[in-house]
Each structure stands twice: as C-alpha cells, then as structure tokens.
Length: 407
Picture 1 (tube, rainbow, N blue to C red):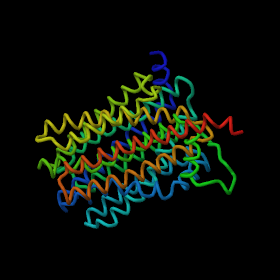
Picture 2 (tube, helix red, strand yellow):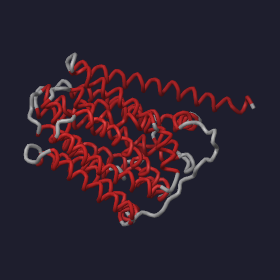
Picture 3 (cartoon, rainbow, N blue to C red):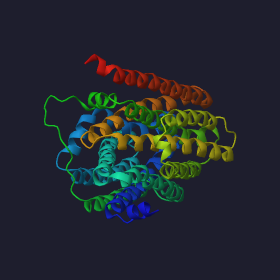
Picture 4 (cartoon, helix red, strand yellow):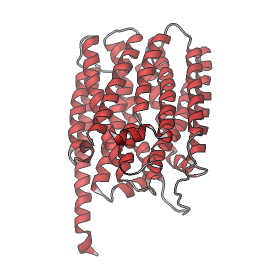
C-alpha cells in the first residue's frame, strides 16, 4: 500500500495520468461519434471500421520516423507537439464532416494515427525512464488505466452528446481535451532518450525482432502483446459498432453504452494484473489468457439481445485487457533502457499492422457473411498465432541453450 501511495503522490505520474485521461476522453468521443454516424448514414461496416483502422496505417509504414522523432529533441517536445497537432486535426474533422466530405475525413484520421503513435510511444518511454524498481512495476501496469477511464468518460459524454450536439461541436470538445493534455505534458521533466548515431542501423521492425528474439520470455511478451493489440483490438474496433447497430438493430446510444461497459472491463482487467503481479511473471499465463479471450470473442457474436451483448462483451474485453496489460508490463520490465524506444515503436508497428488487417477484414467480411462466422475466423486466427509464438519461443530457447557449445 505504501508503494501505491508513493506512486499516487508522484507529480510526474499524476501529470502523465491526467494528460492521458483527458485526451483519451476526447479521442473516444470523436471516434465513436464519427463511426456511429458513418454506419447509420452510409450503412457501411467497412467505412465505420476505417475510422479506427486508418489510424494504424502510418504507425506501421513510418515506424522508423516515429523512433527518430522520439529520440531527437527530447520526449517532452515530441509529445506536446503531437497533442497540439492532434487537437487541430480533431477540429478539422468536425469542419469536414459538416461539409459532408468523407474522403478528407479519412485522410485526417490517417495522419491523426501517426501523431497519436508518437504520443503513445513517448508515454511508455517516459514510464521506463522516470521510474525504477517496484515503482516501475506498478507504473507499467497502471499508467494505462487513465486511458481506459477516458474510454468510460468518452462513452458517457458521447451518449449525452450524440443526437443533441452537432459533430462539429463534438470535434471542438475533442480538440479542447488535447490542448489540456499538452499543458500537462509541459510540466514533465526533460528526458533525452539514448540514441544510436550509426547511420547504417537497421529499421525499427528488424531492430525490434533482433532484440526480442534474443530472449524467450521477451519474445513471448512481444508476441502476446501483438496478438492482443492486433487481433483482439482489431476485432473490437469493428464489433463495437457492427454488433449493436447491425446485428441487434439497436440505436446509436447503444454504441456508447457498449463503450462504457468495455472501458469498465478494461479498467478491471488492468487492475487485476497490477494487484496480482505474479500473473505477469507466470511463463504460461500469456497462452492461457489469449485462449480464454478468443473463446469469449466468439461468444460476443452469438448474443441475441442487448443484455447478453453487454455481459459477453464485458468478459471479452476484461480478458483482452488482462492479456494486453500483462504482456505490455512484462515487455517494459524486461527491456533495457537503451532498447525501450526501438522495442516500443517496433511492437506498436507490428501490432498496428495486424490490427489494420484484422479490423478491415472484420468490417469488410461483415458486409459479406454473417458476423458470427467472422467471430469464428478471428478466434481461430488468434489461436494459430499463439501456437506460432510457442514454436518460435521454443526455437529461441534451444538456440540459447546450445550457443555456448558452438563458441
């Protein structure tokens, strides 16, 4: 308890927590409102999913640039600049929607994902650089709680705003949240990350693979985090509007209600990991958590009414967050300070690439086949990837075992 109180009183952690809380609230208000508008007005599951999926394209394609930005000039400058730009983009999205221009809106979401990736990478590196020991263990498993709580607030506020305020007003509120978060980041200390000046160094993706494949547990954490980010979150980005509106025929407010339940599940999942740190250290936990999440994912597509949807979706999201938080916390703790930027940017890129594929496929297939079949396909895919991680992890372990005899 003393460790928790010490962390809760730490000014640096408070600023990080507040900035993330407020900006994520604005993010979810905007994303859910725009996504619900597209599926309601344009009747396109793919279009509604694209609002989320487009944000992950540039973080994959420009992962090396994200690493460079986070390394040059300090983290504080990078995260403040990215949040200011994000606020301006949010406002621009509202203006474009008011004119009915959908293509430029998707382009804004495309660029918005790039600056958001800078913020997310910077936050993880701040945690690694500012804390150590037990404080690092606690901070790495709890700092994202503010992001998830922002999801709850975004759902609550969004349900109140939808149908009452215009999308332009919603966009203006979102922009204001980013202005606040930028002010919070301005109060953080200056942190300069370790930078490799070798002009011939490999790109982020290859560098990340070279680092994580040196140690079996580091690779396992990387793999399970990518599955949680890519497969489970990719499906979630499609299902959270398709299930309530198309499958069950519920009103737009049901999207916000599902967001609230999802965010509560995420908060409780993250708390479960932080309160039971042995989960993070248990070597087989990642496989067990991913398997249970895949089962609950399929169950969400078999519901018949709103109550069943909320219960099944809560279980799915709770287990998804347990899988995600345990893997991310493990990855942060096992990484070295010198490699943390590369590992974070690289893992975000791999996970985001998988998220794009899974989200767009889920949304696109939902326009062609029953969504229950989509759920089965995604669940099987996650189990196959988990099996692949086990095989590669075993190969890494054998390579480490036989290395001394080969030297």
